[in-house]
Length: 84
Image (cartoon, rainbow, N blue to C red; front, side):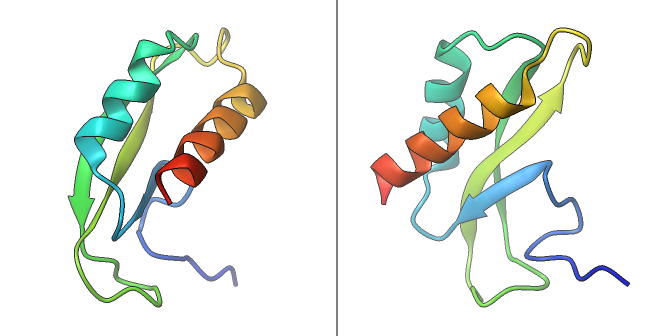
């Protein structure tokens, strides 16, 4: 059995207490990455070491044929590291 971390939608929602979801979504959407858009989200993790409100983004796949998941992941990780 796989253990989920933080949300009931792993790999679709990413967030942390120090992230402003609106700013991160705006930054990621400005990149114009193929096949996805980013929506700001705020949530309280149900399975995590964080116990308070977290901000982040939901990755919404618009076209799975044109997206590059590695590029998306690397750019998203880079932006989160810059925030931290």
